[in-house]
Amino acid sequence: MNQNTPTTTDIRRFGYYIPKPTGTMDIVVHGRVASEKNLTEFHEVISVIFKLQPIIFSFNVVERNYQELTDSIQELRSQLDNSLATNAEPISLIMDRNILIIQKISNFLSSATAFLAQTETQLRNVYKKGSPELNAWNEKRHKIHADNFSYFFLYELRNFNQHCSLPFSSLNIAGERVSENASMLFNINTMILRDGLFNIGFTWGEKNTKRILEQAAPEFELLPLIPEYFHFLSQLCLDAVQLQSVQLAGCASYFDVLHRTLKIPAGAVPVIYIGESTSKETPPSRREIIPMMQFKYLLREYSKLINMCETAL
Image (cartoon, one colour):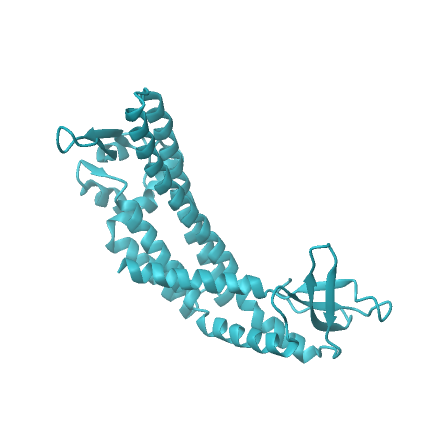
């Protein structure tokens, strides 16, 4: 459904339809024509859905890339365990999975930067440049960048990775037995060579970036930084969504009243029917789906964000 109030003069009525296994549907059209005031209120209330969807969708991409990276590491460990049990040659497996891990790291870094840029753009579109809401979100983001090496480094690493390869001094798998009869335990190492960030001809954009990186250890592990970075991105997404918390509550209340007023049964799809019917037996041919399911999705993601951020504390 378009988030903008319609400009056509066609009449509109609320209603719903119930899809049936036979491919047909039961249709209910509310008898009362929706007034211009009702429609204006409706579109104002549901506008929160379309303001937040771009932010949530962008973060969902980050979340999926993060999960794929985590799953790839776990899958590699399982495959290595299996190769030992079957006496299979693990070298080609290790090479293939190393490439996959690099791919997943690159995807995660790129989606994270895209999320930050897209969220800032969306907040600017909703609240305008220089607004207290946008300024507060940017101040939080910049403070996290300044205070946390994991956020700082991975944000900057995405720019580096766009032009150069990831500066690994080692990307390997090491196996160790804690005792003679114990199973082999595998560790996946992604060690970053600090000087590799400077000796490849890449020009760092910010003057203090190189100075901060030079203070890091000569070699440091990349993988432990990734969950920390993801946590900060989750918090920034939550902060952006919570700017619309009052509007979300208002939309929930509005949909509750609409649901009870229309007496929408389980499994029905709420809609607005547009125009007149050609006959009493035939409903209007045009309809717009009322975005109740989209709203439920946003609420679910909002609740998940809250839980993620609280759990990480």
